[in-house]
Length: 105
Image (cartoon, rainbow, N blue to C red):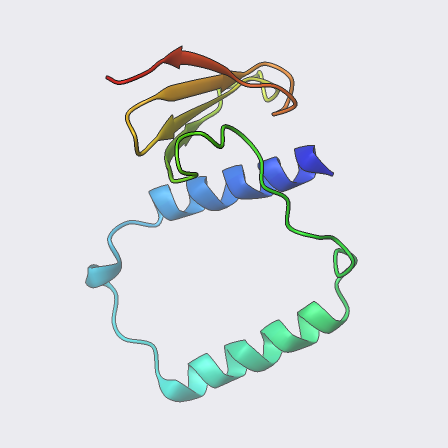
């Protein structure tokens, strides 16, 4: 379950990184937002992940604020996470264990 959560977070972070600046987009209409909300509620009600609980993962001693995530191409079990406190953490087993690459930089 932790691996799935980490991969979902990784995909979300990559999506946000490549989607570009939000200020360049036109405002979303109220009707579009309401339709999206209705769709969200429908998907949530029938989601195969409905029973899953959120799990804190990764290094917790840095306050939990992740600034960057990197996954080397062709090696999805290795993940680098840059924390807001200035440290970088690395996992080579899909997030099961983490090791500090450097701290206080």
